[in-house]
Image (cartoon, rainbow, N blue to C red; front, side, top):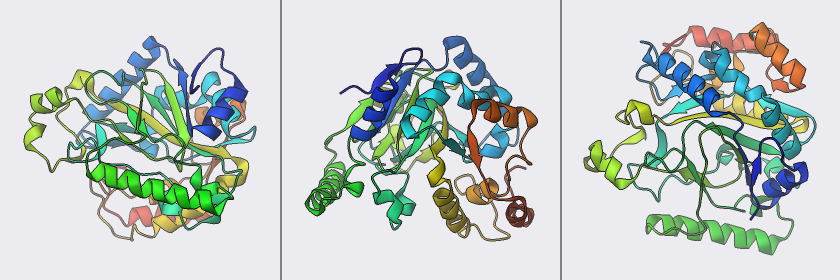
Length: 336
């Protein structure tokens, strides 16, 4: 299984094949160790601030304020790898964020948390087309084998059944997913691959691919007392500072798919009513995303970087974004 590539010498055809066949690819060392240290330091400072101290996520709006972080999306090797994967007309969705000590698990149970990022879109036909090219991208800022769960697990090839033209194969795919769910409930690993990412690696995967967080090792879980907190969800606040799990995440696609994702974002924003009060695990993610229109609401340096890399940024038009700007003003926000 060829799924890993060097940032300075990768095969574009190899990356395309890896994404198509296995559903993911890893590009090593897109950030060197000095860059990793710089970004981690910037994130430490950001989360030390009063308004972000207790949050698990640096949202897209906050990330735009920190150039050393958002510039990682426009590194030549990152853009080249993603363009090879999804096609020459590369677009980013404005949903980038940084996750901090986030584990999408049921407590500390390592067999839980399996999902696909396109789960809210399963009723849409474009998920089943052979030319689907939409990926979740993550730059990992720690080694996955550090004992604190800094990586990701996947079910290789689990993206393929949705688009298979053969009804029998689609049926077998559905059966396989059911068996995977049963295995998870029985705490058995089936078809699981723990991706051995290192600090500075880019891992991107088809948004239909089943994946889950890697939890910390049991000894470290006991060290912070979480063995006695089976109800813990999402954000693990007691991870030692020097071992903080940071991942920079965003979505990338080809030009043909930008409107599909925007329409889905508009649909999901409807679940964020006017006057809502943001909570740590329920921010107004989609209202925030849709309130910014590119390039008008973006830093000039960001627009210049995107233009130089020939990367599109999907957003609503100014008059459409104005609706969501006004909607935000009615909400009790965790931060501006």
